[in-house]
Picture: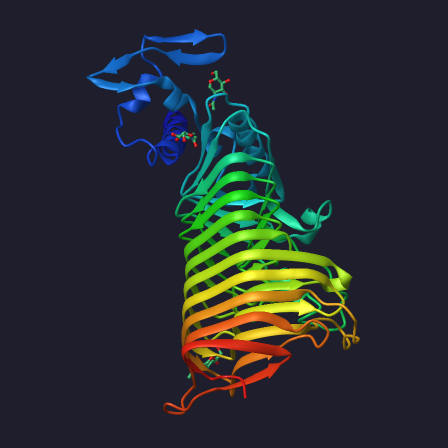
Length: 439
Ligand SMILES: *[C@@H]1O[C@H](CO)[C@@H](O)[C@H](O)[C@H]1NC(C)=O
Ligand SMILES: *[C@@H]1O[C@H](CO)[C@@H](O)[C@H](O)[C@H]1NC(C)=O
Ligand SMILES: CC(=O)N[C@H]1CO[C@H](CO)[C@@H](O)[C@@H]1O
């Protein structure tokens, strides 16, 4: 009996210790920091743990450091991959968000099962979410009945960083199976976006792996001043509508040094987006890097100031694409695609002003989203189809200001043979060597 109790006690001790280690080991470079909390200099200052000039063996730390670490395990998260940890994350967020001095939410190297969560702002100060573990989406579709379009959502948060070498896994298989793209008999319904940033400002997203989203992996919506870098985004090539990074109504966003391969666009940039830079992007499989689609259902769409610089696309359906539906209005303008390598890409350079992604064909219409000032510069590689360049522009609103400089697209496999171009309602200006050119 006594030995059993002893074993039980030691087990509890071990569990607590491992929890503690999980929460703090990664953040605390020096182990002495954990003692600061208990030092005699700590005083309870009206609810705020305050500690002046703690000096432990000459290590100086202000206690605000320690106080401002919010570990999800301390709020009841089990991190065993099967317990629902949603509430623990919500509580940790509440605490961090109401901290006056800013806080770091720590997600240790464990597996956390999560239902949809809305991390809402505004917060009192800046917040970092440091993710070392795996966030696993519940794959019970009834968990998404309240809002079927979001899993993790950051809503109106300013000065937010979400980073770490952890993984965000949408476990999307169940949603893909039920998609109308897989099974034509099913109705077309939206599935959740794995991670949404809505109305966020001064946002940093860094280092994470996002995989197998229910639909879109990461969506930046109505946000401003965004830096996304070092992301790895993956899903099977046949997973429907699983865009890697989606940018909508967002200004001043930089996406850099990221590797993206999914079943849809690696990056899609749609209406209301301005000053978007994508640099150093590895893309494939997927549908390539897209501006659009724009102007669906007669929408007015504006996109401008887009630069895609240094990208490598392999085995994708498109390379760099602009796609607009007939019947829309507005414009896509001041766009640069530069320093791009294509490897086995079906449509390396494409403008499609007659885009139609619906059941049945699209009707001829009198208006269009205009396409103006598009520069293609230093683009080389292989085309999987005969047409390396396709400009399918609107007859009512021809493409304007299209410039190609230093382009060399060849057919895949055929040694050295140049790809062809098909061009409608467009006049292209050429600088330096351009192959193929419009006939
Ligand atoms: C808050 O912002 C300050 C200043 O940029 C930075 O030094 C600090 O690390 C940030 N804290 C968190 C928790 O993000
Ligand atoms: C080209 O890409 C397609 C689609 O990803 C792939 O199936 C095919 O094997 C690739 N061909 C070569 C020669 O790389
Ligand atoms: C961010 C954080 O952990 N803040 C805590 C600082 O300490 C006070 C008092 O103990 C808590 O109420 C805060 O939640």
